[in-house]
Image 1 (cartoon, rainbow, N blue to C red):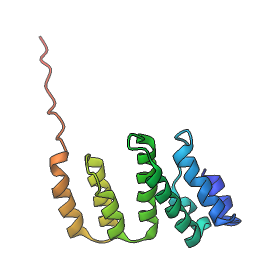
Image 2 (image 1 turned 180 degrees about the horizontal axis):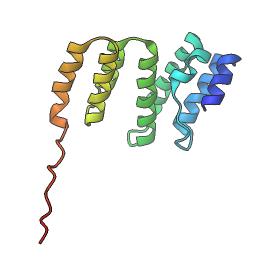
Image 3 (image 1 turned 60 degrees about the vertical axis):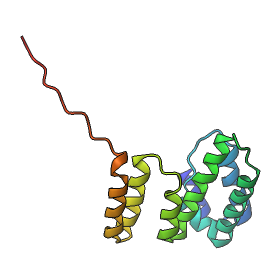
Length: 144
């Protein structure tokens, strides 16, 4: 995928076609390879990214309530769209939806820290601390 993304950056295809292919690969594909929009954003350009967003919205509207893969694919692509937008607040808002794991908090902390917003990053560390379970203490083995 990295090689193909580099080739598309060097000689960009039509953005709508590339957008449709990427969305279809994530939503209808076998679950691999990973599609990382950040790698494709230069080839997609603003028009292609807008098309990805439009197609993702269509998928979200048509998703079955019990369609786990479709819900996952929509969220996965929306998170990446928020990331490539460059809007840190939009990205954090997207990441903060349905918080259920320490990993999600960690991603928010990393995004804020990388954006030079340490106070907000620390706030998210505090919010996420109940999700982080300390490692079990090591127990000493007794030898006879």
